[in-house]
Image (tube, rainbow, N blue to C red; front, side, top):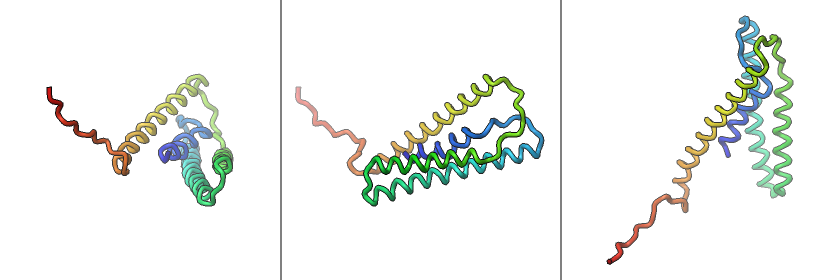
Length: 144
């Protein structure tokens, strides 16, 4: 679950509102870079805040639908904040199909990266938890 929150906050959320980096003059590139970094910071803060809201609601004994609704509100507010950032001022000269193909492949690559990290670290931490031993019981030899 932490990998899912991290991938949403760091990887996917900034990509929703930001165009791909295409050649540009230095001032525009600087503005795009700052907007992208601001989107990453907004995503990280949003993911951390959603986690905090969920835990606080759980600690207070709130019902599960209330907790989910509170987290959804935080996520929607985070997404809305990314659209407040300045828009890309350059006209794109590449075909729209090529741009969307690039974005979908980048999204798939990000999903593969974060999914792999989630599984690997999940398995590594599961070994340390009591009751989740991976060791198989030793069988006594069977007399034939």
